[in-house]
Length: 451
View 1 (cartoon, one colour):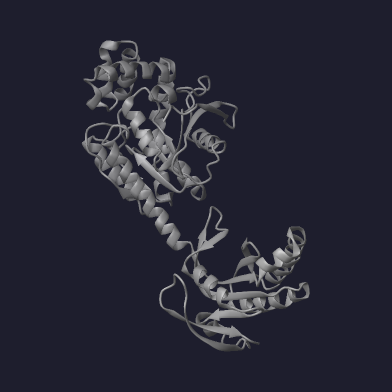
View 2 (tube, rainbow, N blue to C red; view 1 turned 135 degrees about the vertical axis):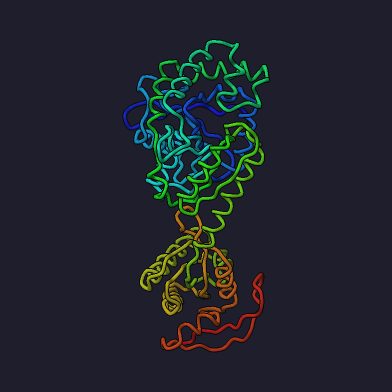
């Protein structure tokens, strides 16, 4: 995979934000790194490149430079959390990402993802928080933060180290990459990375914002599935555990090694953990996106022969007239058209009696056109599919299709489930015996709606 193209989007206040999209898996994941970043220099670090490529094997990865750093706007000063929320939306819009997994590092990248997830749960599929810190500064009720003097020393050290190659090993250890500290290529890379990521003034502005971050009040409000990782420091493990405990249903996952960024710490295990977490969420959502409904299948009897006799133009015209008649009946009986299949229809109903009456009405409505249809109904749990739940699937759909395929001209067949559910509705049925339905377990008793 080549380095993805850097694109620009304009934020709500007119600031330009640089972002990249790694086309890969079908699930969108927005990755928000910490306060020093540079989209293109990042790719010069082999471990970062391997991490992103591995991540993109399962996700469509979107990432961006926060304003004030990297390739994004440099003249707007440090961001605040509300601005970060607007910036996240500004990046998601051109990337056509409607409900991504959000993943971020530290109190800034991860914190902004947490606030976004709490503010817009309908636009967030899940939250991944690497190196979770809810507050930067130490407090009486928050013993894990840094004191103001240590942050000031960090500012002074980074300013010196960015211009002094002799401090590169110490800089790697200081920013949480001790496994790279003795690697000459990494030493050369890190100084360049920090020079390109921000000017000394820009770094100071970010540290001022960094010190102000406190998202503790947001944690209990988060309602999306959340996975929390600590960084490698012992005190951070306890801090991340407390953060996970305050987010309803959040999972806590330890990380091996002594490195800070997710692209350095046992990269394969890290990504596999995220993949498994997101897969479990999607499986759960698929199980919950099931509703009880009655499916109706119709199709024209002898359509192939009629089409051959009439020719394409006349057959197309007749088919359009049939479609108008069928849609009118579906609307009359408060059904929902799901899709058409050649000359057939699939529709769903929230009541089995309406589905059967609709099927009977369709049979009568197409007779003046010189057509006969067959129809089948079955009631069961269906799975809502597609981004908007417009499509349906599941075993109940297969049963409905198989029942309909057994029907003769102008006949409506139903499963025993439908027949039992409409007792007292005035509908009359004749037993058509037991049948083995292709691809469906067990035998099913089928009935014909005769009145």
